[in-house]
Image (cartoon, rainbow, N blue to C red; front, side):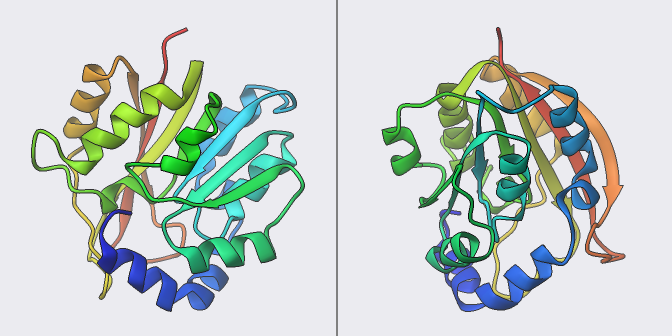
Length: 209
């Protein structure tokens, strides 16, 4: 998250947010993602990147599938709690902010799976050189051949203290096309945390082989 408003809020509310996020399991909150990853087979020998990792719940799930995981978040408090509560020998947690992702880029690694769960709608998308476009540029450089990238769009009221954008699905489709990523809409889903006024669009992006 590039906006200081978001980072400050996540830092200040980190304990409560981490408890909320960890109260549900990854296969329950993003089943479209976990089904696709399990269909790929074992993660052993492959690398996964979790951008905007929050509490580390999903990074830990990827680690249990055998992936070597890099997980990053702009909130240093969320990263601290992720390492404390969802640490594993095959997870590297980094305090790193998107879209720049300086620390992740410095690793010079390519990733077979890239997860951006509940994240990209924090980034402004309304100008030709906006933060979301910059992130897509970065994703192409981080994706291994045939990489599977998962993201989603949140639709609903914005919680107090946070900046979120109601990004049209067609905008992500256009971004994918411009960056040579195959776009796949995985459908809409209700909110995994039970908020009746929130729903999600689930998206798969596929890097060229």
